[in-house]
Length: 108
Image (cartoon, rainbow, N blue to C red; front, side, top):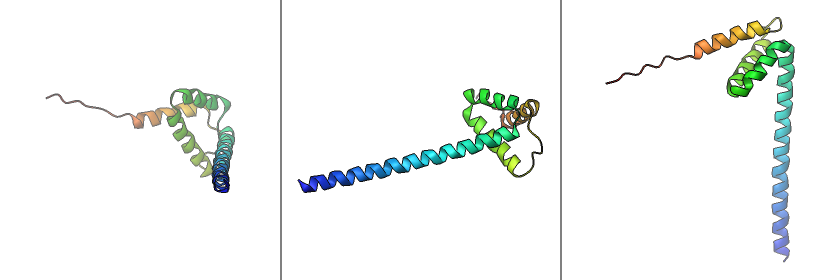
């Protein structure tokens, strides 16, 4: 009987440790997300942020990569003023143009 109680205690402790580690990981991710949003607020105009938010609905991975690039530019000191909606449109066009690939199909 005592062995079963000990096993239950150990399992309970393992589960509690797992829950605690997951919780701390989620909190760290949330803090990182808040920092990211604060940086984006400081480098984007409200219109540009709105455009990214709308684009995130259809292409979340694409927006993540753009946000990362913008944050990197800001942290390296290459952005001297807030990015406007028009500038963001240009950035998006350039990225989309560089990503476009011509696919040729040869029929035999």
